[in-house]
Length: 280
Ligand SMILES: [Zn+2]
Image (cartoon, rainbow, N blue to C red; front, side, top):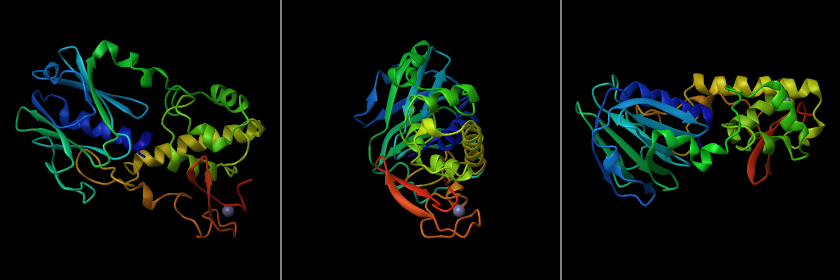
C-alpha cells in the first residue's frame, strides 16, 4: 500500500501540475465518490495538502476534493504543465481505460484521471474548512517528518507491549509509516521487529526514531516504491524498491554484511523481513 513517501510524491506532483488549472467538469463512474461534483466545477486549484495518506486538492471557491488512493488508486495528469509525459505499464488499461473511474476536465487542455483497478480508494467533495474534521484525518497521529518528536515517540513505545513493527505502522499513533518503511527502519536500527515496544532501551528508541526519518527521506528521494499500482502524477514509477534495505530481500545476504541472511515471516498478517543475525 502506498505510504508517506509515495503519497507525498503524488502531492508534490499534483501541486506542480494542477495549481492554476480550473476544473471545468467532472465525469464519474465510481461508487466511492461522495459529495456533489458540481461544487468542484469552476473552481481554480490553489494547493494540494496531505494528511497521512490522504490528499486534499483545495479550490478557490471554498471546496476541496479529498482523496484516499488506498491500495491501487492512481492520479495521472496530462496537459500543458507536463514536460515529459510517459506512461508506466502499471497504468493498467491506460487512460482513459477500463479502470478509469473519474475524469477531471481542466481548462488549458489539462486532464486528471483517477484509475483504480481494485476500487478500494475513495474521493469526497467537502468544504475546505471541514477537511480536517473528516474522521479519518482527525484520528491521525503526528508524522515522523512533521510534528512527531523523540519524546512523543518514546511515550508511544512505552505505552504498549505490542510488537514494535506493528506499533510504528499504527496510523492512529503516528501517520505515514507502512510496511516497506517499517521493515527498513527496523533493519537500519538493528532491532528485531517482534520485540515488545515497551522493552526498547532509550538508546534503541532514539536509533529507531532517526531510522524511521532516514528511510522516509530515502523513500522521498526515490519518489516512492512502485509495488502493485503506485505511479506518480506524471505516470512514472518510483524507484525505492530497487534500493530497499531489507524489504523483499528474503534469502539474500544481509546488507549490513554481518554474514546473516534475510528472513521473511508474517507479523500481524504482514510480510516482515529482517536479519536474525544482526537485528536483536
Ligand atoms: Zn545482518
